[in-house]
Amino acid sequence: MPQLSRRAFASALPLGLLGGGLIGGVPAFAAAQNTAKTPLSVTPLAQIRIGRFTVTALTDGYADMPYDYFPGRSPAEVEQAAVAQFTARQSGVRFLFNQYLIDDGERRILIDAGAAGSIGQTGKLPQALATLGLQLDQIDAVIVTHMHQDHMGGLIAGGKNNYPKAELYIDRRDVKHWTDPAKRSGAPDYLQTSFQMADEVVRLYPKLQAIDGEREIVRGVSIVDLTGHTPGHIGVRIEDEGKTLIMVSDMVFPVVHPGATDVFFLFEQDRAAAKAMRDRFFPRAASEGALIAATHMPFPGLGRVVADRGQMRWEVADWALQD
Ligand SMILES: [Zn+2]
Image 1 (spheres, rainbow, N blue to C red):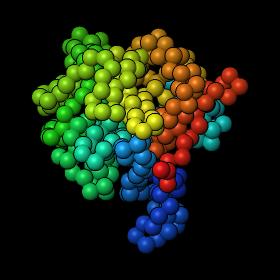
Image 2 (image 1 turned 120 degrees about the horizontal axis):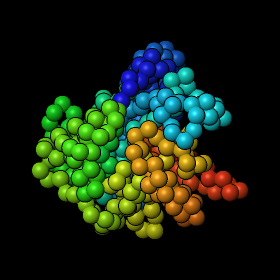
Image 3 (image 1 turned 180 degrees about the vertical axis):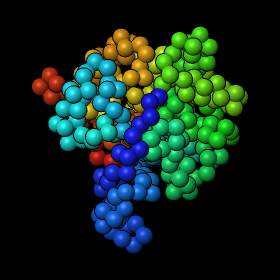
Image 4 (image 1 turned 120 degrees about the vertical axis):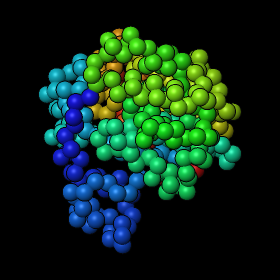
């Protein structure tokens, strides 16, 4: 993919990302000001409970996506929308790369593995897990929502299997698509890294389980078919004791969604399919009031799709001190 501006990454972070705590004994606000030119050095965590599950939002980092990465709208229109949401940056729309760890007290299931340095300021996931006291070989399963580099890079960073004990779940349609030499040779440059990584994932993870359709991984954790963004794009529904969280990965991109469905992200090859899924999903999510976790929304990526006088918008959800 095109080089993203590195200058932009040095800009000051929102205080929320620093957790409002202390950094080296200095109040976060002062630290944020003093270190405005250095990259993020602490990784944020957020935890919520869904019945017997503890779900921890983690993040591998962030990158700014240029305003011309959103087909369906002109760069000026995307920038204008970002200005209206007070999130405009010179370098584009800031994407977080959030992952979610599901822990039921017996098993730890990670959803997505991050870009691991292949895009922007990423590669923080191992550090975030270490903050929880976890090494990568303590992860029992990884569900990869689709085979774009920012969701599977961490699986194979450094050319090795980084989750040696984990079962790996990926939709069969994505495994097929991203390991198909014909698809690879017909794909644009910015998708080549994903094709190359997909080959490596298949080679390094003999325990890969290709998923066909919707199924339960463990009791209360099931796969949701969200085909569109990629052929085998999936989400994960976590459900227990009447509470639900749906991790929807790249169903929702910041600034442009869910307000419209005829706007896309550059990586989406089949725009008709991407639009069809969002046309179905946004109204359903709004009527269910479903709590959603989305990879690229501002950390921790938790919110709801709300229908506001016919217009869909993203409503950020509380994420701390919840029972
Ligand atoms: Zn993504």
